[in-house]
Image (tube, rainbow over all chains, first blue to last red; front, side):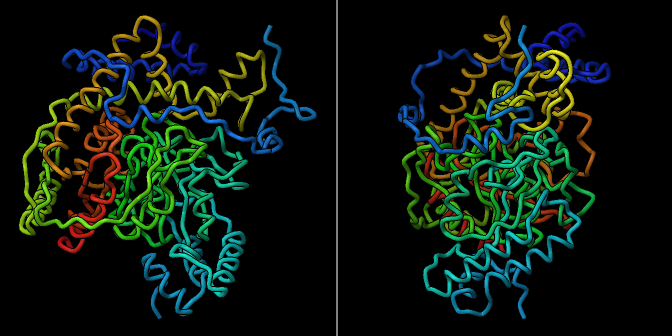
Length: 93
Length: 470
């Protein structure tokens, strides 16, 4: 069983505030799911190849320059806290 | 007069062409149904805008410049951006988010003149198999309102089944098109990874997400797939692929039946219906070959490491700074913690937690790296099998639509709903769900899986199966 402290540590890494009740439920659910993942240990070892086997994936990753879409105003509009076209954030320190 | 909402795309197109009715007539008929519906298949719809689109397409039709989808009313999963319309992804955190641009699939559909009726319900950020994880209520199954419509694209499946839209778009990460299609008794296609641009689809797990259509029959699904597929410079993983209509005679085609998909867990009635479909294919001259996909038993565990890992990265953007909900108290860290803590639902949080755990130092090798290795084994399984057969026939879901609430307390039991739809996703393969029979009033879907970019083979055989299963 994964410990409560472990759940809290992961929640902080994931930037999630969990209530006491949520933490307890998460402890239970995560334990069951991680136990299920033990099945993977039974899978035969496999050396990962850097190239994808599908034969197509190698072609999928060409860099492409994307032209500007002039939607900056719309993107800013979706921001909760803004001022004169800038995104406002809290001080980091 | 015929009920306009019962028409297929092809029939509606013929009617529009002959002038039997207009797109405004069609659109009004659907809107009337949507307004009366208590399924909760739509999260939002804009009546005035729909009618305005219909008027514009009527003018095009009058002018004689129109294609098969012009004037056809459709519905879009609320995880796909439609410019200037709300896009919630079924989440409180995006409750008031207005899409700043069109997804590529929407741009393509608009170009051919479809009418967008509205946005359909989904599990929050497309994570789930029942729409019960939607922050805006569950979508009920049109065949039994005490049961789920499936998910995550439950709204898109239910609205087509209930004739609230002529066709719809959904997205499939682990089964989110095929499973609700099966539970609602409609046709749903999950295309090959890369066949359809993902640009403008709110990301769930980027190595798996794929947009695809729902419709009343296979032909309609084919029409929509053809319209939305192809290379897009806005999605580097989209593939230079052009759908080519081609007929494959069911007679002589080699159909593989994976024995692992008929092991324990499948409901006997479901098995009977799928076996019956296989027998009909055999009677029609198909060659049935039992095949093995030995890594199947690891697929679900593999998926539930990879999917949440990608989620934990993709959903980091919902930080209370860039979009939607923002809890403005305390320090910047508090903004993150509180916004995400309050704005995200239980299943989304659970997957972010699993993903963060699997990617955290000390566990990465045991979980994420191992899962990537297993994913490769699964790919090789399919690769080997497709050297021997043309297509695979198997169930979509081990059971028909389940009761609302039945699986909500136990995430593992919900995950098992996708046991037959997940493995091929890990290999990036295409698959369709089509109605194959019913248990009482509950539909059961047959899944046909093909090799990469062989949608034409799947669709051609599915069309022949449709006639055999009538």
